[in-house]
Length: 283
Image (cartoon, rainbow, N blue to C red; front, side, top):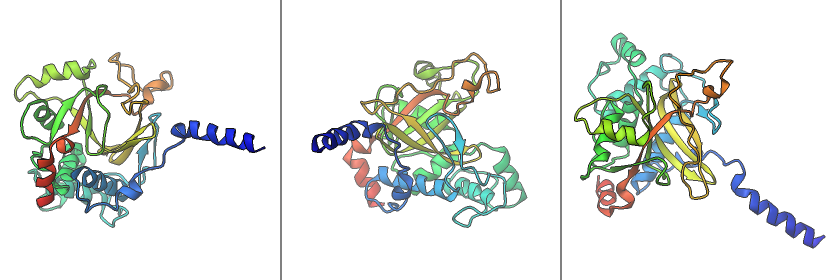
């Protein structure tokens, strides 16, 4: 009997990495005053996901938990009206827009203007990330990360490094063909060339799952789950194949909301540069 129990325990341990991992945000969101910049970034992003009632996209690309949407007057969990919360991301990011004085013009701006980059910029400002330049376009800080310099991020292929809290994972939107990392580099070489993109913030990674938070995802701030391999890298990221096939009853595989043209992983350099960490802590 004792030997049987021991074998059962060993089998349980062997299966542990494949067990469903718990959402890390309830614990992370309590660490807004953390001394390290990566934890502050994760905590702030998680706090906003909770404010929107924890909407999510699971590792199979299925969405759930959407309760309030960007254009609505309904209150979020923190008491703010949904559209005014988005307006606060714009004004708090330091980006010029129609929401200096929230009103009808601001609400129209919130509904009609993509705000995912404003959300990332707002989180970085709230987390006091040194050297991060806010932008309403994700491609601007992706291009900055691609160049050597004093910025807080460096660009790598999503398949070449393990994600960690504070990193950004980005995909290209609206292109007739998938670019991937090599194609993205060709675009970034063009000074000032725009490219529709979306970036999520990595808040945690481990036990086979990366957890990311993004703004303007399903018109909310949503938590996304992506699978990791044994080395902690993204395992077979669901990639858009550029065939033009869309989500419909005949092609349900294309309804996977994680199926994107994943092209960039921005690694937070604070882990590599103690001076960045010290600069953030001094603010």
